[in-house]
Length: 171
Image (tube, rainbow, N blue to C red):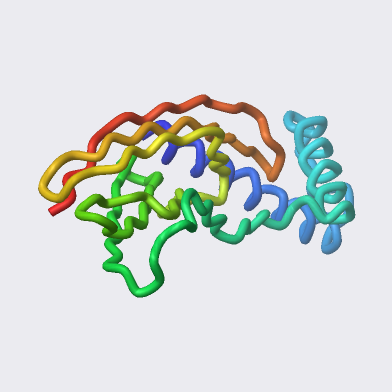
């Protein structure tokens, strides 16, 4: 719920900036209300700085696939597991692990994490991960540690450390 509230606050600030920007163009300084004049000028000025510096755009990072192990036979049986690390109303953190079956053991070969849902106000950076090998019909343990960055008006305001531990059953 806290992620949804943060996203709504960010959207409201962006909408207020757009209102101020076009209002200032249309009617000039009369757009600023006396009560909120300093706040409005700050939002308008900061928004313009964001646009001029190019920082207003979302940093759409390409999904970074981390290869763990490339020493396996080509053409071997592969398996991919999808794990929802965090499940919220407006934000999900997903982990995808690719395994290859070699000598009756599943060996992790690559993984990546991603954010889904309403993610404009957040960035996810993975710091460390640990994924174990597994036999068929057994569990493979994983540990993922990362940083969820909270952004307001395109600027990082807060960084929250997150750690996820769990098991994947490979059948």
